[in-house]
Image 1 (cartoon, rainbow, N blue to C red):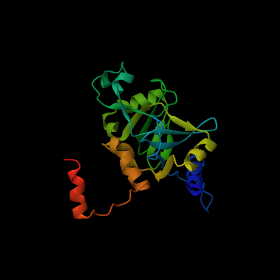
Image 2: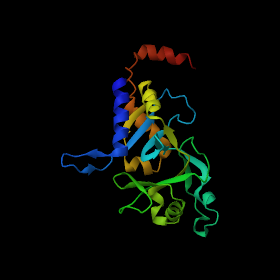
Image 3: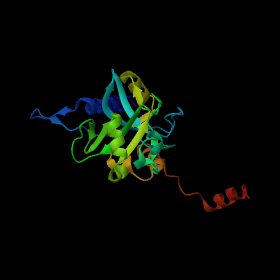
Image 4: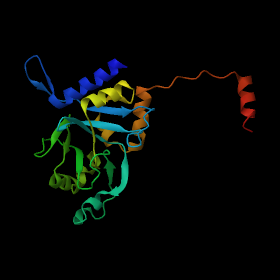
Length: 217
């Protein structure tokens, strides 16, 4: 378990500071998910998949839950936008910190580096700039590769290491398909089955199975 915790913290550190190649060049960050274990009892993080971000809130590690759409529509965040008045896109629950509709962020894909955004990995960026988020929301072509979120998750590094040591989190490589997939509610199940595979049950003796089934008739 200690190895798992140490690995999680190492991967987090590479997201924030990057890694140096032998030629002295900074390599691009790698995307990382924290996947809540089956035993996680915290109602905010139960069955959550957290995308770690290359930003700091003072000395805290920051991430956003990316698999929990809310009942709030994007149009509700931008009531003055005539372009979004019919939008059915949902806002996502990013985490329990700063649960204010004004404290929003956007995870999105872009072929070119945006002005007011930070690279998460590959062509995935994050922005907290309100004007940038609104511009993204009003771009119809961006809708399928964007998530607008309210709230965030954050940890003191020692706190997260302790939670990982206790088995609360698994570290998995992030992918764009996982972030922007059409079935976010299924993402945690897919990743947790990978991180915590269930043992395959042996086939029951047919005679015993017949007797067992009779108990439920």
